[in-house]
Length: 436
Image 1: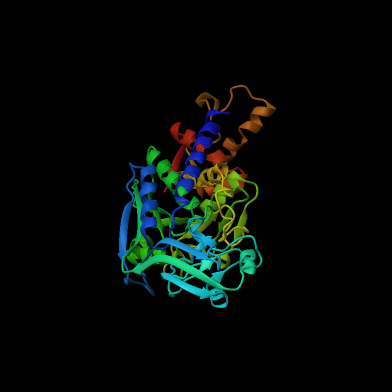
Image 2: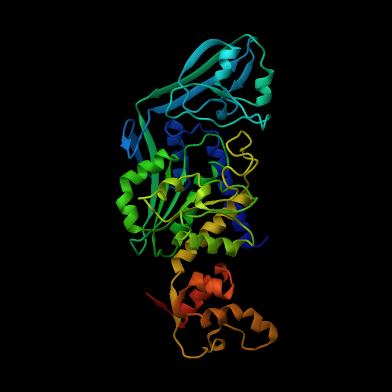
């Protein structure tokens, strides 16, 4: 194993280990386990501050209202013989998210109105929530539901729903420019690995990557908030700033498996974010899945909404709603991997490196420069060395001040990962100048 391979292995494992630590927490759009998640994330990068905000219940945010805070300490269902049918201690998904407290005996037919299963996936149980309507319930496999026998059941849910607050956090890494690259993910899903332990884990590693850059051209803003209501709240508080400064934005979700890569385009697939992520994906893989905005489903719905129009795309490994384990008990730690997480990191770190150097360049010499004396090509020429240096020579040929690096990559059919280090060499030896 090379040093680079070892470094990737360690980093992928570190992200996976972080997913393991936050997986058991009963996160929701509010609550103490959300705050505990942020404490764990902060401990991963103690030198990068996560600025936390608490938004009181009842706060109006655009067309929405922040709900009461929900915390749940215990939830189980006993059958007529006193056996536990389901228990939140086994998996947080067994309790309907935002269930009101209950402690009652109930007959089977009435109980069924409070039970949720997946007839098409009878060995799995679903993730279900009811944030804005008061109800209670349990999630179980369809096979369990069919096996329930008549009689009285005892339903116990020890929860609180009372005025509190919703928590969100952001990290800010300043650059030379006030222009920003925005990265978002969310912290509201309980005990599902791909959706959504993977997003915060990737964001945490990307924050380290950004901090370690020798310099940053752009300012980077990383936002972790509850899906939908958190994004709407953040937008309502920061819209004018986002409109003014965000050059490209990326929502990161379901980034832990290793089956494929997915890009959900912006509303018209015409933003700088579309170009950056497309180029980065092409540099990492020969095949990836592309979806139009009509297949959206995460927080890009809010940032790309008419009138908001933040230039955002969404990046996944297997896309939400597409992979069969999505929003079920099968979305556990077995479907994500260190390699899957590292693959997502490789794509997004390429996006960042490309954003940092994607400019229009102009060669500083007339005719082809003497590359050998600058150590850029071998001093002995052969058929093989010609092929090895073709990318460099093609890059020089199209550095006429008309094309940015992404466009040159498309013209000469070379991945941006190949061109980025070449640009640095050409700048260092004075053969390139930037065209503003």
